[in-house]
Length: 600
Image 1 (cartoon, one colour):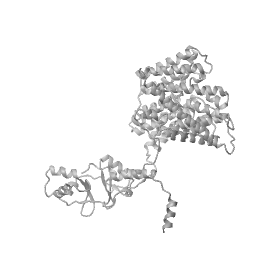
Image 2 (cartoon, helix red, strand yellow):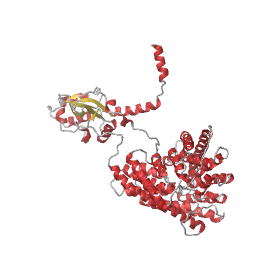
Image 3 (tube, rainbow, N blue to C red):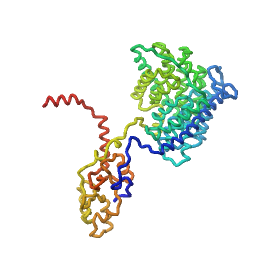
Image 4 (cartoon, rainbow, N blue to C red):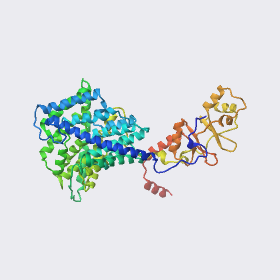
């Protein structure tokens, strides 16, 4: 027979509670926890920015200060080459003897922990990741702080969650809440941070996970005035009075950003493959990447570091075309080489600069403010490269405080997203994960098992066996190899289901030499039975079948306990086939109808 039946499948039990969502009161507990995680994420963001500024001042200006400075005034010299090399060497040592999880730009590592690590991060990651990123960026690395803070904030949320008895899904929620809080504090973009969580990290859209993330981001933005100041990070009030044909340039900027994204992504992983062929340990690779950074700094010092001043100049157009072109070329090259070397740093700020430079240059030939086109290019580059278009749109708007450009932002980012989706199998984030053997699907859809009721998939005509059948008769019955099924429902004289019997059961009984007068009822009456109901979602029944390792389940009437159907694994697989056919089968109904009418 079968093992113990789940409580909600016992005959006569009331139907399970159904609704639009599966959230229960535990979400209130997660929201409360997210408040503390959000505070931790905001504090981590402040510490990271302080550490970056401290290292930058020590390395380049030999002063002990946490004031944010620009590297535009640096004078070329030997130290400009040596400093990034030393920084890369330190990071390589930290990665080898500390934790190799600090390598890379942070977001793929966070996704990997969520997918295959049970959302459990180690304490050393929470310490080493921001420290290594501060060293990398402070010594000239052309990176942003968002990837490191996503990893660090996520580590804070994960460590906090591990102090309590939580499921992997709940730990994931708090991990992502910490990551969103960190991003919110760095950039002052709470809505974009929540959208980033949905589009990149959560792999679901449920109140159970969304509400705590909102709580953490809200707490973080509340802390931000005390820690980092008020207002948009890059105040901007540009506008575009576009003519009737003005939407076409928006699409064009998006297409260019998509192509630019594809080229950068492809080059990044080709260079990473070249590093993999070097006859040396990966510990030394960041130093080689640092050498490229230093050489690039000799050509254009502004290409070093985060480059927030470049973003400001692009938006305000306080910059020349030759300088924009040089920054775009140099920063792209050193960013690709440095990131491919496995050093620590984020990709978001560089992507904004790449897209902004291209958009600004295009804006010289388009109607309106070049700074506005730079902002459109930034959003398109971010949304297409990271495959997160809604995040890109909202990030650009919140980052500047300018919501007047939502229409052009939507169009350009959508075009960029379309280009990268059609041209690239994977994004700059998921390609790295795929190279480690973990395929990531970035599409959300409703589970067809949730949409269907058991009555829609069950077989109504069911072969059964009577409860009064003798064991010897059952043995003879299953001895016939032409029997179509391996198990059958057992019905009593009133037609009620009293059990299931399988070929394996009767073989076991034969080996045990049962008494000749025993019946199937005698064997089934003391066994629990897993059943289903015609009015319940298929997903509930499928969960029970998996939990009890059952391939065939009788479907009964809740009131009479009479058999009304049966569901097998084959029926569940048929649902999958139906869902696939809905995607693949194409028909023209109007033409078919007209042909049918003509035939009549």
